[in-house]
Image (cartoon, rainbow, N blue to C red; front, side, top):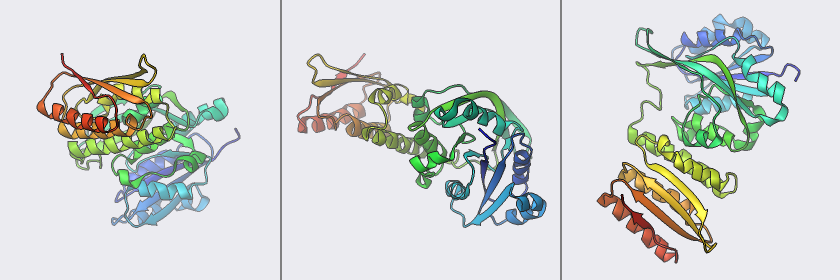
Length: 349
């Protein structure tokens, strides 16, 4: 591969000083051809003027591109940058994070070695928490590892500092701005459904959390996070029903679904044909069930299992058979009966 152009995308909002260190980390990359696109998402602190004054040379020669738009959030800013991007590959850097000098080179390597088989690359990172004085209060090294596609779909595990082929956006679409706070994960979930991810065993970025400036995700309540996780998961299930995800992968996902929510919900799930060849048997176990999670899981089961032309038998085991769980099962049994399908069997320890 002959020196491909890489587009680095950075949304910025009122980060006139911090964005400078992000820009500097991109300009110091050891890889060859890079364009750094800054989308100013309606800043009111003079972010644009500072960038234009400090980096006039990089703006003039095309290494840096600056675009301003009304404030619509980071997802919308990334979408604007994707539409402006000229690169063969795209990677993302938030305005107060940093790339190590080898980030682009390291993430490009699998593409150059593996041809068309890989669509997304990612590497490890250092995660820091800083107080209002910008002092580091906690630091963690996250080397990451190879993840099964289902693991990516069930939990937000990889920061958006990935690299992917630009052409994949034409297949999966832009960032979903309705997923505010989890649009990064939703974007990676959709990528995982159409291409291979490849882990690079290196530490190539610094991800900074600022205690005085909580992220959109951190500012959500537990219930809000649960609902947003469920929306991303339901989107993956809907695409499974369209034939884009294998059923066995969905079932494997249900087994680790407890990791996708705050507070475990589904501990295990398995599906197999029954002896008569007609009825699909699904075993699901629950732990520490909450009403909202039951309602969400009811929708999940309705969308996946009750659309089958075959009969469906669902066996559920509870470690705490609370009244709310029994009432919920009764609702589902009524729906099953109306469809002429086999009621759920409740098993208790």
